[in-house]
Image 1 (cartoon, rainbow over the protein chains, first blue to last red):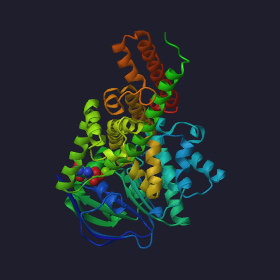
Image 2: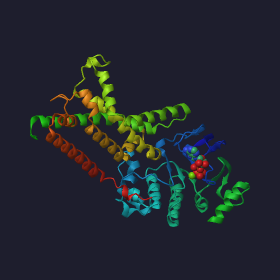
Image 3: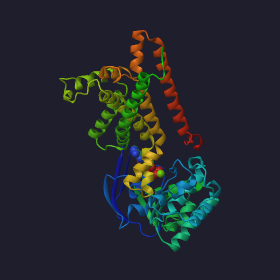
Image 4: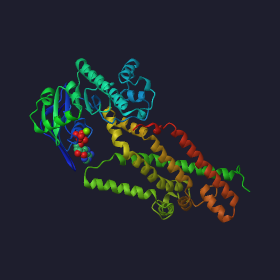
Length: 227
Length: 229
Ligand SMILES: Nc1ncnc2c1ncn2[C@@H]1O[C@H](COP(=O)(O)OP(=O)(O)O)[C@@H](O)[C@H]1O
Ligand SMILES: [Mg+2]
């Protein structure tokens, strides 16, 4: 997808993503401190909220090919299983039992299949929401701190899954995370946002090691100190 | 003496149920989509924002309209010289249903709006991320808000059932035609038929209780207490 000149104003904040940016077939990371506009930018790029101005070109992708995964996912008031197959139900696709079991296994939710989804722990909800988004094979995937409540083992499991998928069936991933190790392990390109603007961008190793931008330096310094 | 199997008594109970169910059904069909639409509409401009808030305020006001006022208004509209006088509906079943629909629709739409307003953004965003169409999103909304919508309809039904002021005015409490339980009670007390009034009172309470039990049973599906936050 391609975007440019995105703007959005709230009372106390304005987003301003001027540069023309392409997100194509790679894994992109977005980092930056709280309130710098990552989520707002992502919601606009994913088509969930309207920008005040700007261009978004999905280059042929349909809404059905795009997904976004949240830190606090929405759980349908139904079982884990019903939540998982919901996107298939929408597409009138008959669930393949073997694949369903495989995904449940990966998320460690096999035993909870019949459990009421809103009663899962927040980490389990995040895992369910991740596999629920994977099950319909989207081509453009936005991930907003969606691993924040998972244990490290699960985070690694999903990171490996993303890397494996990227080899087999490449998609475009845009990932917001404060876990810099996560960004480092999976992302090809990284954007650093500050006060509503993208201030720096480059290969993950360039951004995370020896950055020039002073704001980015400060952000990385603090993140590393606290993790 | 009061005879439960008396044709007239049964007729009154039947008419009450028929009127209440009809007006609740019509109000649900009008009020649920309106409440959802109101919750979905997020105006961007000052003027449209003001308009929406105004509509919400009017809706809230109508939720508490005194029934006799509604009765009066419907009476004025349906009376022989009124705008819809030619229909000849004054003192008929239709007149009572119209009055009740005016009373109950704002109650249903108001409750649906308040409940939907809280979660509609999240549900809509979620539906969009799953690739749901407009229609599928609406289906999901109604399913996810099912308990709240059901509660709104039950509340409307209860209000319709217990209402007396408006339907007495526009129905006229005519024997075998527009006489329902509540208006019978009011009349019986004046006539000194206290036993019959008490028994109709008890029947009303039993119906209210039955509705409540049904609501609770259906609500068993709701497992909110299991929510983990
Ligand atoms: N709907 C809204 N109304 C007003 N302000 C908002 C709204 N959404 C986000 N903001 C503000 O915009 C800023 C950026 O938010 P967000 O994009 O969520 O930041 P983050 O980078 O932490 O994800 C924050 O200061 C937030 O308060
Ligand atoms: Mg955020």
